[in-house]
Image (cartoon, rainbow, N blue to C red; front, side, top):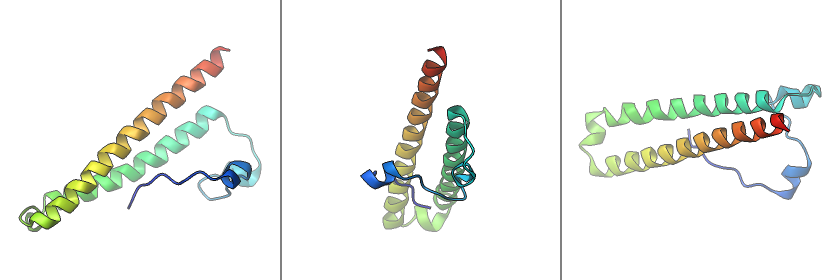
Length: 105
């Protein structure tokens, strides 16, 4: 599973995206900002856990660790995983801070 950040277009900012992961947009129900943040953090955490398990399994495989070419590929995947995890952590922290600020005002 490859993780990436989708580019934001003007159209995506103007129209909501309807999907199974966002049932509130389909039903028209309002969702609290903190609930929405918690759902997204949970979804991202599940994805990163799958990626971590793949990396761990590969790096525990002697066929991968004895092949320098494969080792470089998996080290790059580990690096991307680390960067993504750091980004998700920062976004979650900033989101919580923003919600706390909104609640205080």
